[in-house]
Length: 583
Picture (cartoon, rainbow, N blue to C red):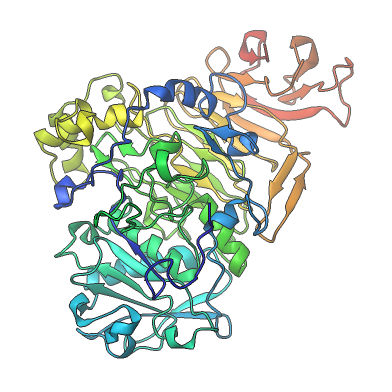
């Protein structure tokens, strides 16, 4: 596969990355846009074997992690490492090889104020004519545009600054009335090609009157995902593979179908890992439908691989949330991104956490459904699902009436009977008659899966579960775990290993931490020690006077050694039946 570059001709002769509707992306029928025929759409019945191999929600032991599969293949595609910008790495797939040169550490952006662009935009030799038509962003689009800019500003060392819309900004955003189906953008200015200076890094969105999804701008919706994606191009990120809207390799005058099976070169080419992908999260084992409101969700922020690559290009922002930050429920004031602030009854979101410093917490206490919390760098947690805010619905088959009651409570409009059919039973002529439940392989629990990522370099110390049966594991820091209600499993482990770093290369993690469980309930909760090979009941020592659990990891029968793994367990005294050991 040829890596996308900024060579003239990759995206028309003006180097535009023209994004249309991803062929297997979500549901557009309620906004007047329909998915292109996608012959490769299949139910992930094969997900039985696939998800068994790549699934965080294992019954015992440490949840699976993408780093566990490096060098192997999943779903027939290689699992690429991160690392520096060299062939065979995630960065090589995502880096277009150019970036904006900030002026004194500042990247400027503006919203075009005029109804018609001038100069190079109307020069047919540069790929533009007046037929494309231009219009300014609405006020709602500007608010969403600033949110998308802030998403990237939180990640990288340069600061973004809004300037007036008369031109001259590093990034200009505007609507086009008759452009591509969704949006397009330009890579940053290539100093070897001065004639492109006034269009490099600009982003153009199909006006909502032509494409209704661009009027849906709240977290989880496709319009905000579009803005995030196009700004990624503006900053120098490419699509992960050699595909682009409008590709016509067979010469029939129609855009070629673009599918994960046919076009993904490596496993992580999906929205789960990168918002620059054309492929939905379910292609890589995630589940991105909030069944409470029956809506297909899109990432609200750049995802784990985007964060890694953009920080390699521009440096990491070490001022982003440096205090003791709480994400999710009970969020602290420094969490201004609505996607990361949870409230009872609202639609779920998909996002990645970048956090520079502090003693931080992921709080899922408001969920009644089972959660999986994974605090490791590069890992994903699973939060939310059918009955997330009403435990009485868990195990009850969804009905349109229940779903629409949830939509009303969330302040959203009703769903139709035809959409209910498409999501749960399938509709003839739509997605080859397959239901979204079958395509995504979501199972009967209808849970969100792998929807909250932790960026490499972000250390989140604490986890708070909800009233479901949660599985919680930490990282190399001193972690604090609170399970709250339900029968919770606390995974106790050491997190030694090698982790990629955004400055290039890797770091070696040596875990000498002491993790604390705040509310262990004997006979209900479990302590999973199966990450310690060969450890049995004879290799654990529980001191009820100090609430200290020691694990004799070298099996020599001697405790109080420096190589013991030590945990503090508050709550009930531990008995033999509370442990899970490796089989």
